[in-house]
Image (cartoon, rainbow, N blue to C red; front, side, top):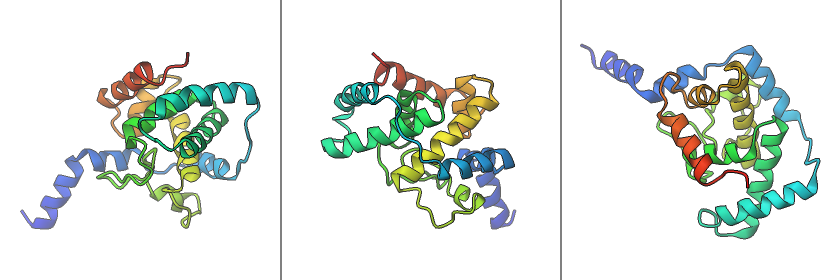
Length: 188
């Protein structure tokens, strides 16, 4: 077997390649991402946001010791999650599992940033110069993609999480996220 064919076979069998195939662009998701990048709405209920920020900040302190950095990240997460009608706590659990709050994380499949978004999306929505290591961009795109899969799976969160991770049909990833959500990021 030629070396190139052997490498291709290995790639096809790897979960990283499966993740890339799972997230291939489609018109509906491309339009949602494009709209999300242009949306600039903000919090509607400041009091609830502040209570939530304080609670989550205490929980996140071990991962992000700097209080200003921690609060800025939590505000962004809360904003982007509520913008697409996802629980902010779920987004935090996804971030924990995907990147362990490392905004510079890169997966073996090439996904980048906090929510491990695949870089081909930037080209697909006509914004190739955007940076997925930039927190706002990563959260906006990651939350939009997760919401899209949640809607496509008719509210089945386990299947939506598996799609997000490129592991539809497997339940290890959804279990990791749901475990993090129930143990560390639940709403009090």
